[in-house]
Length: 195
Image 1 (cartoon, rainbow, N blue to C red):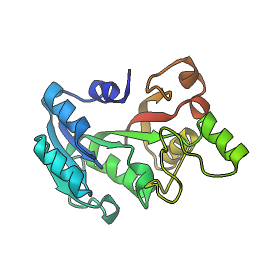
Image 2 (spheres, rainbow, N blue to C red):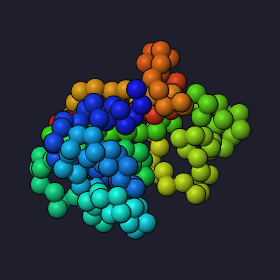
Image 3 (cartoon, one colour):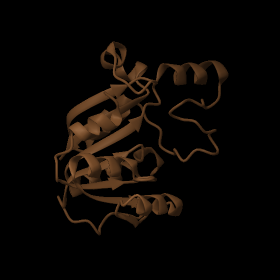
């Protein structure tokens, strides 16, 4: 099962869904088409916004780092933040806001603790370039890299319940190693959380 399949399984049919940092709207479009959700995306990049609009995804332009006060408590069934938290200036605040706005939230993160990332840093002595972290340190949007362990500790500190979690290999699938030693063998993780 890949990330989008997990998100579909964790999202109810005809529910209200907000996707923060929705990019080109691919996730919301899939959920709209297959689950008939009422979708809204938040995106900062104008070219991504244009793609969302062309594909029929409702989207507003907003910088998540400026706050999400325009959304009331528990105003969405599900809030998605996929591969976004690590690019934000204040990931802890974003996590608190996501769980405030949504009855449930789905958060996907890249895992900086993946074994090849560790080895590249150890042996090459410089920030690694990988499939999930494809740009050099000075070109990347990622400003708050974390490991699976880091993310789970932050959830605990914030009083956020992790209801379900899945771990993916570089091929985008779960396997025995990712499920047994996720902090070492998973390139990314997806969490269903609530507060």
